[in-house]
Length: 399
Image (cartoon, rainbow, N blue to C red):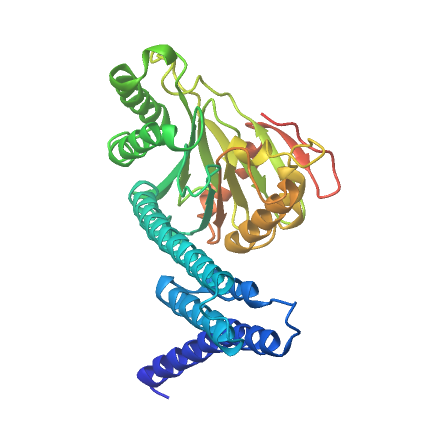
């Protein structure tokens, strides 16, 4: 079957389904009319005809609703004519009242459809803004498989104060995940600024401390120009910078006040390293050298980057989401499957609504590294302090 045939078949099925639903209000009009005609004289069922246009308005537009309303008014007039009281005061009042109520329902349909179109336009703009600000992360960067997910806390919003980015540089890849102070639409300006600064500076700074210093200068300049006076000194951005070389089984991490990543290895282990963070971006401490933490990152390992909207999500008992414990359950899954599990589990934990923006990135190394790098892996493992969690282990505290 050709595409035009499938399109025609789908359109015909939609037409049939919509017109079958229209049989409900039409059937009600017929049923009420027949019942009123054969009911005793002291039983008046005509006013119930207003149910027909009200039901139609649930799924149809103003024109169809108006047509059913006109049918109901005609049925009310027929009832009056059939009883020989068409021009009596009571029947005339019922016809006028039914016409007014039907007109009101039609007017509500018009307003609803207009707002629906406006909401659709707003959503399309928000989705376009999200594509501009948060470029979709590539599924692969060299030997890395990547997946990401973003949840905005604001109703009807697609973007907020959390951000992430990834790019290929030379013989490696670099990642950024960050969290602007605050949430929702007011934080989008800082998020956009940091993403733009990262995409430019990441190719001009060889080390993570130099990259962090460049981002600090950009955020500080932006806040100096646009920070409200009443919030002077209170706006900042936490950020985690990650560098993954192709030829070494390691990952270099610089934390600017951000949460440490989770390292998921084979089995059901989740390792939470103790980093040496520097202050967040935007607080003006440009003279402090950012520390670089080196983590082992071998083929088969997964690094999970996240924002505090994930670990600070609460259930109805007020308990925080145990990310390390839950991630350990699906540690051996591919990044897309891992994030699918975590997303469903997180929304179940919170009852379907988050109190803050949340972002997650899963990065899995798939290819073997050079043999010379493997000889240094044991030394690399000793360069950081760590806490390990299994799916039945203790629960990490929140940052």
